[in-house]
Image 1 (spheres, one colour):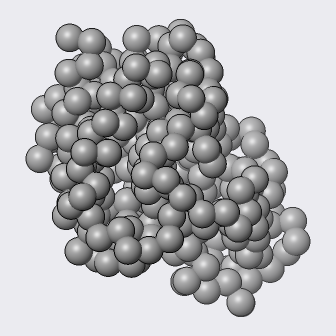
Image 2 (cartoon, rainbow, N blue to C red):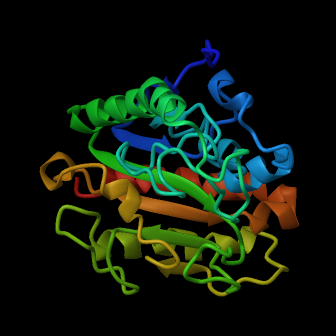
Length: 274
């Protein structure tokens, strides 16, 4: 019988402005339930590379003081950015990492009973809390916050391709047209992009990347959006932001100016449409 972890599913910080940031892949805890099943060659480095590295440094404790919901568990072991019913290899409880690394001893991943425990004890509570927050009148805008590898991974549609410094996703196309009218519109994405474009001179960008900004490539953010119905998201202007990790890997001094950009984005989002 597996052990039961006495660790939280998520951390929530109430904000002062009506913007919610969700960090689904920023957790750093390993549930006791999965430890005895780990593959002996699955390393802490594999686990770290599968996570949204530097999301804590870039999105937490911002001066703007948004609401923040952060998942507590490593993404390799539980992914609340997937529906609970998604049992694929890259689903809610993964079999391999986004780099294709085997996580558990069995090719089938965790035993079904343990997988169900992870879903019910960690993923579902996070998703329920996220749903409550999105439905709250105190939340007017929603931003799903991620970091991404600087080059497309083996499991990505852009394998081996350089990525932008920032990416905004609204479930739509590379022009910023949204996948549905309830998602953040093109005008909002263009406004946020202008903030980034006028701020990047503060960054050390002496490394390889493709563009400063792209829309809906290499991700559309649809995984985040698919967890809700259209009616639940209506009026909340939801969007996804991805920040290139190579900004920080290249020069850790990029953390402070990148945080400043994120803070400006959050403040602009709070004021949008007022």
